[in-house]
View 1: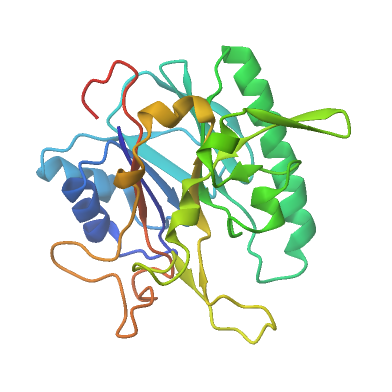
View 2: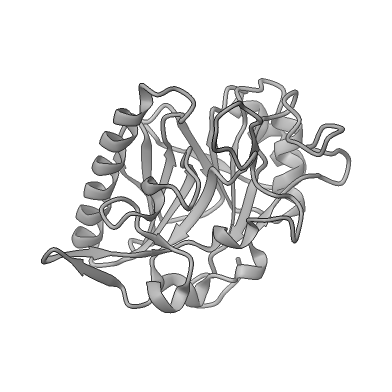
Length: 269
């Protein structure tokens, strides 16, 4: 199953670009943050391309919009910052859009939101007896930030061999781990250098940020192909970059993210 996540920056005219991305990457599951366009129009455009999709309920989570062409998807827990969607009663997609880091007042909100999300992940995994969990969305944090790396936060580890130990015990408490493949995009070995660009005057600023991420439980690694994980900067008809190679704010201030989670029976994505 090919998955697309994109923070669409409240662009009311983004549907034609979205439809291109969905068609070109054979997307079957779409997760959007800050989507403010007409979803009925998007579904009609996709229909004209012989792509049948429907919107899935996210009632209680206005920050996330979900659509796709998969069957056997039921909504799980919905909060202000996370929408849970459960596929085939086994795969848990926790779709998130956390508060922005730009405003200092949001620090406490992020901590509260993450604590609630982690509680909901734990409860959902226990209820359906599965830890096939994917967390995807706009974390508004980098993989190296405490929200993503700390044991009592998302605990996203960049090395699969370490993450595959499943958990760590710290101060007599067990903390389950996620594998975070997004670390491979850091540095200038390859373009793009991240999903979001910010050239503020903070004393510590890497300029490029990887706020848009997917992390997975180690149990899903066999169905996750790192080579299929991509940050998208163009479609067949247009660039998503400005003349400096940064995300084009007229389209979105974030680049979209595409990845694949193979079906459990290794059928068609």
